Image (cartoon, rainbow, N blue to C red; front, top):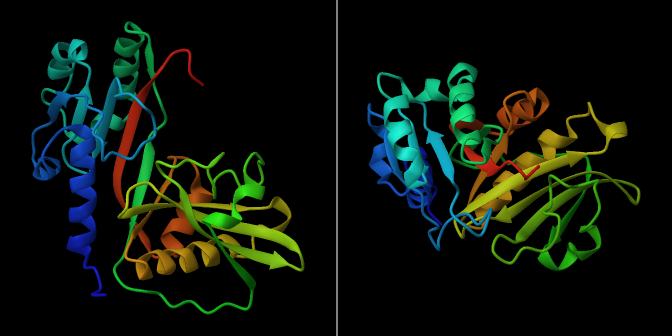
Length: 255
């Protein structure tokens, strides 16, 4: 398998987000902000069953916003004269939040997304490592210890496909897992039990899983929130770089 370049990785990712935000992949590189109609593309990452009332993303320049048509007049005025990446700042977010609440919605947190640098790292470790496949995950569903590494249950539209755990005897110290959000984009999550933190277990597991995803022809990606500095540090130390920011609106009744 030929090694993916940085351009390959970003191109595939932009094409995926373009499907989800109802735009062209090149729109993320424009100067002007873009407002489109919200859609529910069959090839989207399936985080919910209906179109988002509002979804917004930036790769660091402009912003692309897909939204329900009733939001378009307000959004077209709101984005005027603003650099797209600043729309994710608190002062602009507050204005958006106030408008959404008139329609029964609120903003979710921002998701800061990382893409891998090209190439394998080939990390060696003295940790006792165990690899798990989809057939091995049933016993972990419904438990909270590894809620970031694995989904809450088997989800056929974005199944957990691979995980790696570090063991202390029979005790799992930490686990990194990835879900196939699309056939090409596999999202990595990591959990380390509190008593084992501070030993670089998270960085080791994410690095190993990152390489394994690449070796299976997928692009591993990693997401965290703005203030989760521990998660940021793991991403940066595991061969990932900040790539884009995305967020969406949820119904007021949702947590």
